[in-house]
Image 1 (cartoon, rainbow, N blue to C red):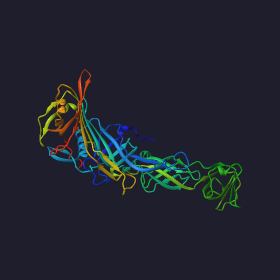
Image 2 (cartoon, one colour):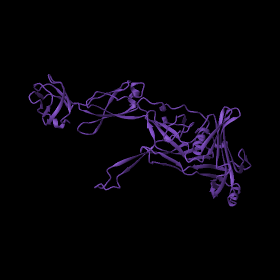
Image 3 (cartoon, rainbow, N blue to C red):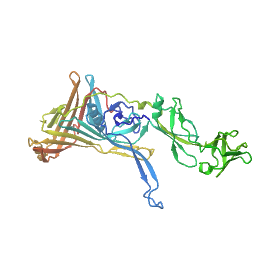
Image 4 (cartoon, rainbow, N blue to C red):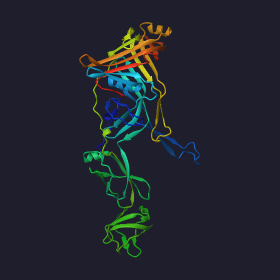
Amino acid sequence: MTRNYLADYNEFVISANARETALNTEQTLDTLLRIAKANIIEADPRSESNADELTGHEEPDRLYRLGWMLGKTIEFPKAQPQHFAIGYGFGLGICTPTGWGSGKKHLCLPTSDMLLPGFTAAMKLGAEIEKRRHASNFVDTLTSTWAKDSWAKLSLGLKGTGKYTSNIYEETKSAAYNAATLALLANAVQGATPAARLDSLHMLRVYVPNLSYWLEKIVTEISGATPAVLTVTPPTPEVDGAIDIAFVETGKHITSVSTDFTTKNFQPGDSIIVSGSDSNDGTYTIVTVAANLIVVAEVIADEIAGDEIDIELATACNYKALYVPTEPAWCTFPDYIEEPPLRVTDVVLKLGGKWNGTTFLGGHTIDSEVNSIEHQLNNQILIEFRIGGTGDYANYALRTGRIQTLKLDRQVRDWILNNWMEQNEYIGVYLKATGDEFESGKNYYVETVFPKCGILTAPLKVDGKVLGQAGDLQVLEDLTYGSVRAEIANKVNAYAA
């Protein structure tokens, strides 16, 4: 087994360019994203036991599956303009592109719609463990962080309905217990080589007749045919090379002096295969079983003991194959779009000015005194299972109200922030991070404007050897220009369109 399970091979893709057309309707995956290596995106199972019921015993004895729901966070430790466009485009709800040289400027504004645009996401685990596609994901929370001597960071808290599709499939097939080959019902197995196809098989197991347990089987080869044929190591015969087996025509008896057939997993109705005899090789149906006697339904010939006889159990039973069929189109991930990550040294930050719809006027520029500034957005999305759904995933998503704050950590070199707070003065906040040029005179950038903010608190502290301050600002809604405006420039045509 050479299946590669290193997390370095994980990949994450989404449908960034186009929103889903309806809830739980998958969209084309178009953008490969470099998220933090520790991030795993998967739906969480919902379950409930019967601990609240009278069962006649102390502990619960049933577990009920209640479908799936997604609630995960993706982080961008070296955030790029495209990451901000995705975050603000899907997190605010409106994203309008306009031409800018060979690229686009994407203007993201808050929507009044109760349902945000949803996107489809998929994750590849390891080099070849699993690929799983998740429908209808929403940006519930957004945190953008600009801290001293670091890259811009972006964190997106996702909520989703839990609808998913895996590239791994399990099928049940009936075949003889002693089968040496097993043809799948319809599918080929993913892989261009025999070794790759073996890696695509995660497990083959058989439900052992009469004993009622699952036994894992060894598969040595998988054909490239459709349906694929699995070569299986058959079980050791229940009776293996016994020399005391005799056959009696009258009564249709198979007898043994020393073998206790009742310990060999034989039951009435089972099919058995006899081999190694002179006259009685073949398939038989058991009528009765006793310690040293098997009575069969078919005719047998008299034969004394002496040959090395094998008796195999050949009863039909269920096999379960867990494998990767030939992959559908969504399993082919797009190429990565390279953009320069943004640094905090690329930032211009202004407090106290005014946004007039086109330009940020005035304001107090602060720079090296800033330890960090952080924007937090919370859409308070509600995901629920409601009437009319399938029970496997949620069928309801609602944005219940947007809340935004800014957190400013700085050295106290003046009393400006405190004065604004004491006077309860509303201020505008402007932040622009400029990256490299993608053509002459056209740079990647992220610009966020908060036309109206109020200062909640601005407590003083000692920051090493100097005075510090941690300011909490409430982002408010300006009746003319709204609460936030995010504009991102890069070379991608559209987001959340």
